Image (cartoon, rainbow, N blue to C red; front, side, top):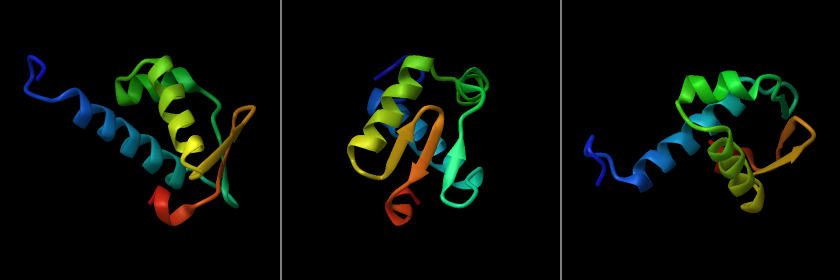
Length: 80
């Protein structure tokens, strides 16, 4: 447990949910562009490292594909 009473697992899951929501809201034609990672990280209060780790986890789970700043949704239902 952290000082705030939030377990690290729940905060990681919450950040992953926020990123998934951001991808869904900002996708056009099954793809979303990540133009400003710093702004996304600031908005979700996570580090760039955590952002890329969470994106990698989604990619490893075959939910998205991340190529050079573009995120392609490969399994929309699981992302949702």
